[in-house]
Length: 495
Image (cartoon, rainbow, N blue to C red):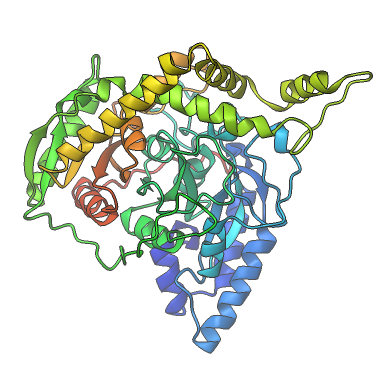
């Protein structure tokens, strides 16, 4: 039998059901892998007790013939999801030590489906970042290394960098992620795994620490497309506790998987050919087009004319919503409280927020407060919302002609930690291909498709119609099968 920790969700589920191993054996193997990979700093806390308890329940369920969809499968949980009795920090000092007394809807669904929790995964602070360098608990390190001899620690992407690093290193079979502007797809591309952001409203936001409420969306990150389908199916569904939750049925995405794209049309948006795009990204995109053509799809050129405005629009709307959401952390009602001797109320607010928030969070709160201020609200925030509507309309018109869109996921492979942290604008450009789908609220996923000249993973992005996660998954499967991506990082972290 292969090493249990090499298995993804489907392999664990099927192997456990076939009696190849017990759920406890699987949980113990992954607990050991997590404990032995501290060099990655992928976890903020480890929860081996939770994984073992779920495993023991799964073993009993197998004996009684009462298995759930994820029985025998332990998962990593991004530390943005509230987990009852287990610390939830959003990677910020503001929430250090906070143990929720309730469970997020997504983790409630996953645990009810039989999954266990291996631990809470590190992330960019309050999910603000593209490299996992803004966490108050230290940088997450990608398990990958460039083959150019530099040996520099690489960014695992952000904000779901703990999730992507842990999956790529095979210390968790799959993990939850959240995506506000690309925080599932970009780290998936950087680390050679698959990740899907479903339609806005598919997964409940209840119990997820808020960043930008009109954009935040939970999703699945895993080794491959099938595992994403299985996990997303367990996470999704209507939740009356979230006013933006969609009251629609959850399809059986795994059962519906098909790489046959005959009769489907794939759009290629010309505006995604940005200036100075690396030749190897462009070449991979062209290869992806040929793979989908080989799968039976018709390739159609389309235009999304307002794409060029997506990034500045996002970086007005998201900080504006963040400045509003994070106003609750004032030292009175939530989180940390700093009360210097003799301080009045305003001074307590200032001391608390200065101590609790990191530099990137402060930067976005300041931007958001500025664009929402009385003198500039219409000039920035109102105008950005109008442009967002135009961006969404571009997608609606494109999807009248095609079934899915194919683009690169990120404008580069993973970069070295610290390489871009001094220039926020350069860092924000990492999201240039992922932000438009977030603004439009449509489903999108990244699948690993190749390596760059330095031997680092590159991803392709599929964007679909609202609620057509099946179409996205199927196109992703077609690419996955043809790309045959099986590259793996060398296990340096366990030495």
